[in-house]
Image (cartoon, rainbow, N blue to C red):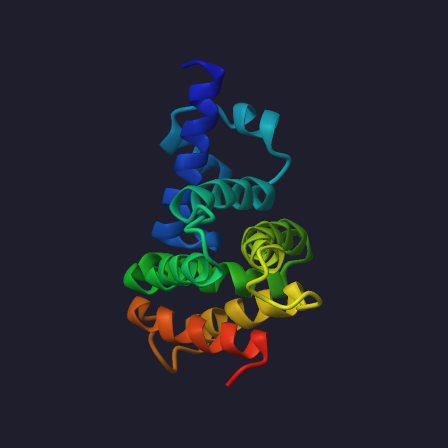
Length: 186
């Protein structure tokens, strides 16, 4: 197996196992077996299970949810949030994300790779907000970091608490309310 193929197989195996058995059930041995590579091959590229799992998940999520460019802030955010909420349609992904968040609170070795993954998603979303500011769709001075928090807040809260569904059909109304607030209009 070529090096590039082995690398891709390891990433695919890590995500598949994460979504099947949860973070705690993932082992380097299990990933190696699923990817048909030696454990030493995995350790050549990743120093630990946390870095492997979060690198694999970052790549997978970037493929599943690329940053949209519809030509408008509302269009971009609606597309992004719709896809974000689609996670609710995949119980194994919901379980995996809940497990990742819990692990980040409990395992200091996992916290850094998890936060790096979170930051990669924040940057993707923040880019949409900043582009909206540059196009004049939001006031100069809009706090892009706070805007990102306001988009991801309901997602994580609903995902973790489960008090309401993550329904993609809700995305347009959620985005409209957020954009209206950022613009300071009612």
